[in-house]
Every structure is written in C-alpha cells, then in structure tokens.
Length: 346
Image 1 (cartoon, helix red, strand yellow):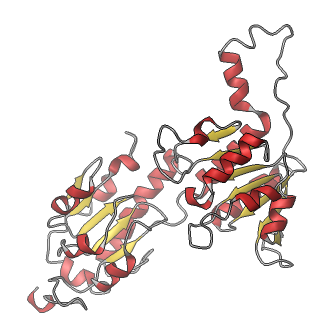
Image 2 (cartoon, helix red, strand yellow; image 1 turned 180 degrees about the vertical axis):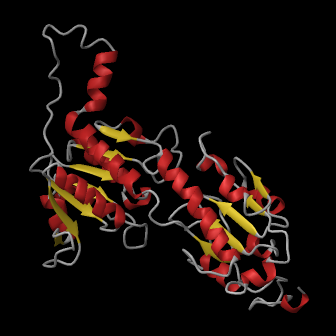
Image 3 (cartoon, helix red, strand yellow; image 1 turned 45 degrees about the vertical axis):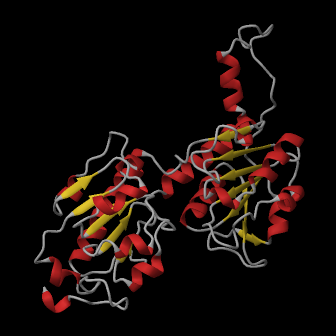
C-alpha cells in the first residue's frame, strides 16, 4: 500500500501507520506472527489453535538476542514474554506492527520507541490473579506449618528415628488472628486479602493513612505496615519508588516472628539485607517466587538461607492461567487487526 510508505516521526523507517488504521493495510497482506519464546508459557500442555487461526504462526521455544532480527523478518506481529525489544531492533524490523506481550508487565519493551515508530504494544492484565493469589496463600501456609522442613524430615529418616509418634522440631502456628500487611492492593493483592480473610487474618494495606480500601481494609504507612504485620505480602509493580523498598531499615522494624512473601518482582527486595535478616534471626522467614537475577547464580546466598522458601518464578503459571494467557493474546491480536484498541500500552 504505497500511500502509507515513509510514515512515522522517525522519517527513515518504511512502515505503515499504526492503529487505528491497522485493519486497512493488514487486510491486504499475509499477517505473519512469530512467537519468540513459547517455552516461557508452554510446558507441553497448551494448544495454540487460537493463534494459528489468525494467520501463519512461527514458534520458537527460545530466541537469543542475536537471533531476534532474523526471526522477525517479514513478521507483522511479534509475540513474546521476556525477549527485549529496544529501538534498534524495532527499527530493523520494518514489517513489525504489533508486539503482543504474554504477560502483564512489559518492561522488556521500549514503549517510547515503539510509540515513535508506530508499533503497537498490547499486554494481558489479570490473567494470573487467581493463580498468584493461591500461590501466595500456599507459601504463607507452608511457612506457618513448616511444611517444607517437616516433609524433608519425614524423607531423610528423622521421623523414622523419633522415639515418639511425631516430631516437634519446629513450632507451627495458625493464620487466624494474625496480621497480613499487603503491599499493592491491585487485583492480586485484593484477592490475597480476601482469601486471607477467610482464614481469619486481619488485613492492613500500604496506602494513605486514615482511608479504607473498598474491601474495608485499613490503609497504613510503610513503617506501620512493617511494625504491625505478621506477614508482609508484596504485590507491587517494579518502579523507582518500589525498588529496594524492603531493605535493612524496613526489615529492622519488623517483628522477629514475622515473614516476607514476595510474589511481585525481585528487585523490590534488597536481597543482601534480607539474607542478613534471615541468618541473624531478625525475621522468622521468607518465601520468594522472584529474585533480582533469574535464574539465580549457584552461589546466591538466599538459596541456603534458613527458613527461606524459594520457587522459580512459577506463582503465575497454573495451567488455567497459561491457557487464559494464550487466549487473551490471540484476542488482543485479532482486535488489533480489526483496528480496535484492546489492552494497548503503546
């Protein structure tokens, strides 16, 4: 469609105009979609039929940075979870019109550059709310019951060698009556609060003091949250304000019997400070589904820290969650091709 050539503020990229005119030019072209990193969402149990119905679909388990430009050649739509799209790459892919992110977060995409170049970006909010909330409660229960330790004790022979019918090595406690401090009262944080309330927990949440959330939960300041909570559950987005917010000062204000549970982003927690707090007994324990570096190096100190449950960024990944994710991505792409705005972040 020659009338669209040369479009864009960059002036040197030959691409068609962005949304809302997408349908006009895509009707006349073969809409090739490239999924760059299916291994991040497919563990052998997903069906990509909804994506295949849209048009030609090329799938790669993993794509290295140096492979991206070649694999995206001629693609109008790129689907990715973690592949990084910087301005240089996007300029080198003149056919690219849409980046469909298989996640809620999209900090792997240079959004400003995408907007300048007329490339739309769509994410998928809300698909993992139930999964992450369930996983959060599972971690809290595991910490309260010392589930991981007692399972290991039963398997390594300590129970077999016990002189009584049971083991009482680690005291356990009930969630009922304990205070849950939630950092981030979005969809996930609110669902965690609702579930925790069913266990009889009292809920406080980080926010402007003196104002209650819609669920009736009390808003408190950061110091109050640290000092009053038996569990701190983190569901904040990563931002300059949230980076390192769980640091030495925050941890020093916590009860010695309290726990940190991070299901959000690794850099929100100062890992060195948390490691010190765990090893010194400053706090009772932690559960982390995210770390600063993923996967972590073999010598990551938290991997051997006492009473610290670590899981491989898997809280979001129930089969139901991943199926919803694929269907939502397909719907985002279809909407874009029709010239409709859906879950657009650029």
